[in-house]
Image 1 (cartoon, helix red, strand yellow):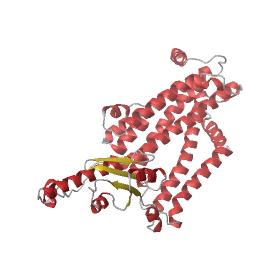
Image 2 (cartoon, rainbow, N blue to C red; image 1 turned 90 degrees about the vertical axis):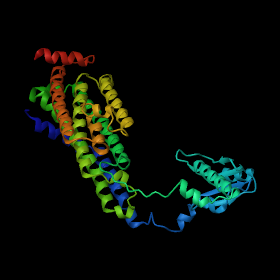
Image 3 (tube, helix red, strand yellow; image 1 turned 90 degrees about the horizontal axis):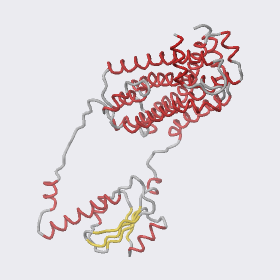
Image 4 (cartoon, rainbow, N blue to C red; image 1 turned 180 degrees about the vertical axis):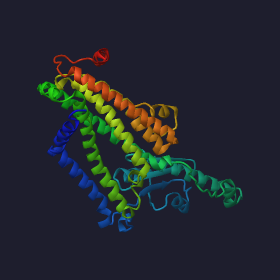
Length: 404
């Protein structure tokens, strides 16, 4: 491809000379890296008097007197139980934020639960129900001269288990897999639109008429796309790489609290880099092709909207199926070039996949990139001197193959 290196160098200089791009990349990277070092200098997770201040407080009015204090503490360890004189007092304590929640026991088998704002993970009501059931069972044993401890041991003996994970721990890998899928989606959307806009701007200001006389359309399109890929790789590598490295350095100070998000195995990162870059190039060529079909930047959404729709469908499909990485939907999408960049990565991180499947999927993706790049370059060439209304993609592709 004639003059490819010239186009690539020119496009890269435009990225790295862009002050907002460089300042944003460096600033976010430095701040994120610095955040990883905070626990090294400040005792954020140490046990101190602050833990007592954060202790939960529950208000309790036991009208029937059916709950032994020791049983309450067993079900709510490390919690302050504030006795109330009435149901109204419990309600008042919760409303005034003097208690995190409140319970009013009206009979041995009935209670009311008070909470001001109930969170999605609130399990206090379920725990209190178990407390009431246990207390009721203990009373039954006492009333009938039964040995509560012996019966409880017989009904619920202590079981010792050892967990041996022979494959992958999906629960442990879920969050960083989820985050990386979102990251590559954002990069494709952000840089894809930038590439499409750059192509369209050259047509709108007629500079394309000069460019096509000095270099090939293939060099122009490939130079723009690969420059965008390198710019995104630099940005993600600097920020994400710096965060992961600085977290590993300070992991002991964090107490492993961010392992679920930042302690990523090397093979997962390598897979993410390969398939993420492949998916980026695939869609970048599509965006470049879409940008070549119009002559005004305000018309980009008319053509690029279809690509964005595909990206959004793939994004939500993978996220909804990410907890079932070995399901049929994920298996199929992991081989399609439109979705393999995220679906295959999710299967590798969380499911069972053979090396042969990974290689086949990656080869399909690479061949698809070359195919889209070839067709995109031809469309770019045939539409460079076409101005006016946007050209429909199917007509452009038909024209390319008709000429060949």
